[in-house]
Image (cartoon, rainbow, N blue to C red; front, side, top):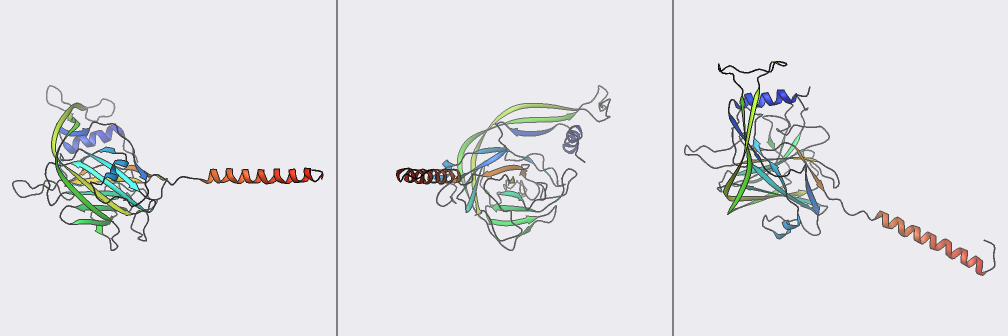
Length: 314
């Protein structure tokens, strides 16, 4: 059964408790990454000039809330995505602000496998969606790329057949990010007791938002590449002209004073499912049909003219 909007809002409020802050980037959201078709090889270098040919799409990121081990805030507030393909290979470039380069910095792409709808949380069965297999392309600064699969919490594994490649470059450059700071709190009366909706009996949730601009030093650019299709049943397969789902995750691997990683495992920045669309090759069939029609018309006209010249009835 689908969770109602008010129950979803209440759940979020209770999960994060009173006065918790959320951040939502300020930009016009597209729902799909546009994957431009190019000639030649797809770029594997994050600094390649070929990436200027690819339109950029930006998506909001937020703390992962589905696992029990969660965090309240994350370093990466949004992620820019560019993508190119040559009808054989596909390349995604993720770009996001991260103030420091750390060995445990990591990023990932996630795709559904097959026709079964899966939750973006590793395909975990949820109240609003069935479980299903997912294919995860993972990259970590100190270990490189890994082609992985999952079918729910605790099932993540590295595939026997590794089909992806990835390369990341961090640059010390200043950039500004703008986001909405969102505060949810449970309303209380003068006596300090929770105010409840008279119709539903649910606690009333108040929301406050303000726009914050922050200067960040350091940007990661990570490129993932793979063929559009593979022989591995655990892989997602891509067909130009379709709209497969895609999700993103990022970990800030900076260590705290205690030596613990700031983000690791389920403690990460994530997006929900979005879409991407690989531009299909141009369809020249309409021109072929037109040419055939012209040739046939010319042939008929030629026959008629020949008959007229010979004095034969038409």
